[in-house]
Length: 223
Image 1 (spheres, rainbow, N blue to C red):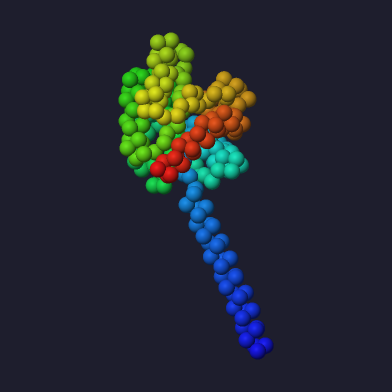
Image 2: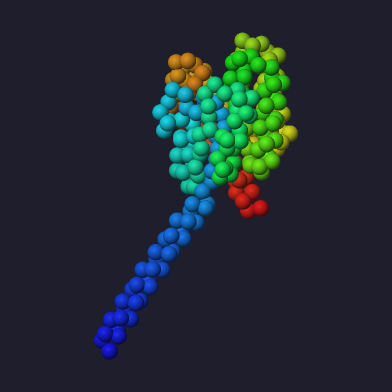
Protein backbone atom coordinates (compact mmCIF):
# COMPACT_ATOMS: atom_id res chain seq x y z
CA UNK A 1 0.00 0.00 0.00
CA UNK A 2 2.83 2.41 0.91
CA UNK A 3 4.56 1.69 -2.40
CA UNK A 4 1.33 2.38 -4.27
CA UNK A 5 0.91 5.73 -2.47
CA UNK A 6 4.51 6.67 -3.28
CA UNK A 7 3.93 5.83 -6.94
CA UNK A 8 0.74 7.92 -7.01
CA UNK A 9 2.47 10.90 -5.39
CA UNK A 10 5.37 10.60 -7.83
CA UNK A 11 2.98 10.36 -10.78
CA UNK A 12 1.02 13.38 -9.56
CA UNK A 13 4.19 15.43 -9.14
CA UNK A 14 5.46 14.35 -12.56
CA UNK A 15 2.19 15.27 -14.29
CA UNK A 16 2.07 18.64 -12.52
CA UNK A 17 5.63 19.44 -13.63
CA UNK A 18 4.81 18.31 -17.16
CA UNK A 19 1.72 20.55 -17.26
CA UNK A 20 3.72 23.56 -16.05
CA UNK A 21 6.35 22.92 -18.71
CA UNK A 22 3.76 22.72 -21.47
CA UNK A 23 2.06 25.87 -20.19
CA UNK A 24 5.36 27.75 -20.21
CA UNK A 25 6.18 26.63 -23.75
CA UNK A 26 2.69 27.64 -24.85
CA UNK A 27 3.09 31.07 -23.25
CA UNK A 28 6.44 31.60 -24.98
CA UNK A 29 4.98 30.55 -28.32
CA UNK A 30 2.01 32.84 -27.83
CA UNK A 31 4.31 35.77 -26.98
CA UNK A 32 6.36 35.16 -30.12
CA UNK A 33 3.21 35.04 -32.21
CA UNK A 34 2.00 38.31 -30.73
CA UNK A 35 5.22 40.17 -31.59
CA UNK A 36 4.60 43.05 -33.98
CA UNK A 37 7.32 43.69 -36.54
CA UNK A 38 7.73 47.27 -37.72
CA UNK A 39 10.06 47.93 -40.66
CA UNK A 40 11.66 51.38 -40.62
CA UNK A 41 12.34 52.11 -44.29
CA UNK A 42 14.49 55.17 -44.73
CA UNK A 43 17.82 56.84 -45.35
CA UNK A 44 20.67 57.88 -43.04
CA UNK A 45 18.23 59.41 -40.54
CA UNK A 46 16.81 55.92 -40.03
CA UNK A 47 20.00 53.92 -40.39
CA UNK A 48 21.72 55.92 -37.64
CA UNK A 49 24.50 57.67 -39.51
CA UNK A 50 27.37 58.53 -37.13
CA UNK A 51 25.76 56.72 -34.19
CA UNK A 52 26.23 53.40 -32.38
CA UNK A 53 23.54 50.88 -33.32
CA UNK A 54 21.81 51.21 -29.94
CA UNK A 55 21.34 54.96 -30.46
CA UNK A 56 19.87 54.74 -33.95
CA UNK A 57 16.20 55.53 -34.46
CA UNK A 58 14.96 51.91 -34.83
CA UNK A 59 16.76 50.77 -31.67
CA UNK A 60 15.60 53.69 -29.56
CA UNK A 61 12.05 53.38 -30.90
CA UNK A 62 11.91 49.67 -30.10
CA UNK A 63 13.20 50.31 -26.59
CA UNK A 64 10.66 53.10 -25.99
CA UNK A 65 7.77 50.96 -27.23
CA UNK A 66 8.81 48.01 -25.07
CA UNK A 67 8.95 50.28 -22.02
CA UNK A 68 5.32 51.14 -22.78
CA UNK A 69 4.39 47.46 -22.79
CA UNK A 70 4.40 46.74 -26.53
CA UNK A 71 5.82 43.45 -27.79
CA UNK A 72 7.58 44.79 -30.88
CA UNK A 73 10.62 44.40 -33.06
CA UNK A 74 11.72 47.39 -35.13
CA UNK A 75 13.77 46.43 -38.19
CA UNK A 76 16.37 48.92 -39.38
CA UNK A 77 15.87 49.15 -43.15
CA UNK A 78 17.60 52.50 -43.52
CA UNK A 79 20.41 53.05 -46.05
CA UNK A 80 22.53 56.19 -45.94
CA UNK A 81 22.31 58.25 -49.11
CA UNK A 82 19.08 56.67 -50.34
CA UNK A 83 16.72 58.79 -52.37
CA UNK A 84 13.08 57.82 -52.63
CA UNK A 85 13.81 56.12 -55.98
CA UNK A 86 16.72 54.14 -54.52
CA UNK A 87 14.50 52.95 -51.68
CA UNK A 88 11.82 51.96 -54.18
CA UNK A 89 14.34 49.79 -56.06
CA UNK A 90 15.23 47.85 -52.92
CA UNK A 91 11.75 47.78 -51.41
CA UNK A 92 11.01 44.10 -51.93
CA UNK A 93 14.15 42.79 -50.25
CA UNK A 94 14.17 45.53 -47.61
CA UNK A 95 10.85 44.36 -46.18
CA UNK A 96 11.07 41.76 -43.44
CA UNK A 97 9.05 38.67 -44.35
CA UNK A 98 7.21 39.00 -41.04
CA UNK A 99 6.53 42.73 -41.38
CA UNK A 100 3.28 43.91 -39.81
CA UNK A 101 3.69 47.65 -40.44
CA UNK A 102 6.10 50.11 -42.07
CA UNK A 103 7.47 53.54 -41.20
CA UNK A 104 8.51 55.37 -44.39
CA UNK A 105 11.13 58.08 -43.76
CA UNK A 106 12.43 59.26 -47.11
CA UNK A 107 12.93 62.38 -49.19
CA UNK A 108 15.73 64.17 -47.39
CA UNK A 109 18.33 63.22 -49.99
CA UNK A 110 15.96 64.14 -52.80
CA UNK A 111 15.75 67.66 -51.39
CA UNK A 112 19.49 67.93 -50.72
CA UNK A 113 20.10 67.01 -54.35
CA UNK A 114 17.41 69.40 -55.56
CA UNK A 115 15.53 66.63 -57.36
CA UNK A 116 12.18 67.62 -58.87
CA UNK A 117 9.35 67.26 -56.32
CA UNK A 118 7.39 65.41 -59.01
CA UNK A 119 10.02 62.66 -59.03
CA UNK A 120 9.90 62.36 -55.25
CA UNK A 121 6.10 62.21 -55.32
CA UNK A 122 6.14 59.52 -58.02
CA UNK A 123 8.58 57.28 -56.12
CA UNK A 124 6.74 57.67 -52.81
CA UNK A 125 3.45 56.99 -54.57
CA UNK A 126 4.72 53.66 -55.89
CA UNK A 127 6.16 52.73 -52.49
CA UNK A 128 2.83 53.39 -50.79
CA UNK A 129 0.88 51.51 -53.44
CA UNK A 130 3.13 48.48 -53.16
CA UNK A 131 2.87 48.49 -49.39
CA UNK A 132 -0.91 48.69 -49.61
CA UNK A 133 -0.88 45.73 -52.00
CA UNK A 134 0.74 43.81 -49.14
CA UNK A 135 -1.94 45.14 -46.77
CA UNK A 136 0.72 46.78 -44.57
CA UNK A 137 -0.27 49.81 -42.45
CA UNK A 138 2.05 52.76 -43.03
CA UNK A 139 3.27 55.76 -41.07
CA UNK A 140 4.63 58.32 -43.52
CA UNK A 141 7.25 60.62 -42.01
CA UNK A 142 7.60 63.92 -43.83
CA UNK A 143 10.68 65.98 -44.60
CA UNK A 144 11.33 69.65 -45.25
CA UNK A 145 13.49 71.00 -48.06
CA UNK A 146 16.36 73.43 -47.38
CA UNK A 147 15.17 77.03 -47.57
CA UNK A 148 17.93 78.00 -49.99
CA UNK A 149 16.11 76.08 -52.72
CA UNK A 150 13.49 78.80 -52.82
CA UNK A 151 9.95 79.19 -51.51
CA UNK A 152 8.30 77.53 -54.52
CA UNK A 153 10.41 74.38 -54.20
CA UNK A 154 10.03 74.23 -50.40
CA UNK A 155 6.25 74.57 -50.61
CA UNK A 156 5.89 71.99 -53.39
CA UNK A 157 8.14 69.53 -51.58
CA UNK A 158 6.46 69.70 -48.17
CA UNK A 159 3.03 69.33 -49.78
CA UNK A 160 3.95 65.89 -51.13
CA UNK A 161 3.57 64.16 -47.78
CA UNK A 162 0.21 65.68 -46.85
CA UNK A 163 -1.21 64.90 -50.28
CA UNK A 164 -0.05 61.29 -50.31
CA UNK A 165 -1.12 60.63 -46.73
CA UNK A 166 -4.61 61.87 -47.58
CA UNK A 167 -4.80 60.02 -50.89
CA UNK A 168 -3.75 56.67 -49.45
CA UNK A 169 -5.28 57.15 -46.01
CA UNK A 170 -2.06 56.49 -44.12
CA UNK A 171 -0.81 57.98 -40.89
CA UNK A 172 1.32 61.10 -41.26
CA UNK A 173 4.06 62.54 -39.09
CA UNK A 174 4.69 65.87 -40.87
CA UNK A 175 8.39 66.41 -40.11
CA UNK A 176 10.67 63.58 -38.99
CA UNK A 177 13.27 65.91 -37.42
CA UNK A 178 10.68 67.87 -35.42
CA UNK A 179 12.20 69.05 -32.13
CA UNK A 180 15.78 68.29 -33.15
CA UNK A 181 16.42 70.23 -36.36
CA UNK A 182 18.39 73.48 -35.99
CA UNK A 183 19.23 72.65 -32.35
CA UNK A 184 23.02 72.33 -32.15
CA UNK A 185 22.79 70.35 -28.91
CA UNK A 186 20.68 67.69 -30.60
CA UNK A 187 22.36 67.54 -34.01
CA UNK A 188 25.73 66.26 -35.15
CA UNK A 189 28.32 68.71 -36.42
CA UNK A 190 27.08 68.37 -40.00
CA UNK A 191 23.78 69.96 -38.95
CA UNK A 192 21.90 67.29 -40.90
CA UNK A 193 21.89 64.20 -38.70
CA UNK A 194 20.68 64.03 -35.09
CA UNK A 195 22.95 62.83 -32.33
CA UNK A 196 21.84 60.26 -29.77
CA UNK A 197 19.97 62.85 -27.70
CA UNK A 198 18.35 64.21 -30.84
CA UNK A 199 17.10 60.75 -31.79
CA UNK A 200 15.60 60.42 -28.30
CA UNK A 201 13.65 63.65 -28.87
CA UNK A 202 12.48 62.41 -32.28
CA UNK A 203 11.33 59.11 -30.78
CA UNK A 204 9.46 60.86 -27.96
CA UNK A 205 7.65 63.09 -30.45
CA UNK A 206 6.73 60.41 -32.98
CA UNK A 207 5.76 57.78 -30.40
CA UNK A 208 1.99 58.53 -30.36
CA UNK A 209 1.81 58.08 -34.13
CA UNK A 210 3.78 54.84 -33.95
CA UNK A 211 1.37 53.55 -31.31
CA UNK A 212 -1.48 54.43 -33.66
CA UNK A 213 0.37 52.41 -36.31
CA UNK A 214 0.46 49.45 -33.93
CA UNK A 215 -3.29 49.71 -33.46
CA UNK A 216 -3.73 49.65 -37.25
CA UNK A 217 -1.52 46.58 -37.59
CA UNK A 218 -3.45 44.75 -34.87
CA UNK A 219 -6.68 45.64 -36.64
CA UNK A 220 -5.33 43.95 -39.75
CA UNK A 221 -4.50 40.82 -37.77
CA UNK A 222 -7.98 40.71 -36.25
CA UNK A 223 -9.49 41.09 -39.69
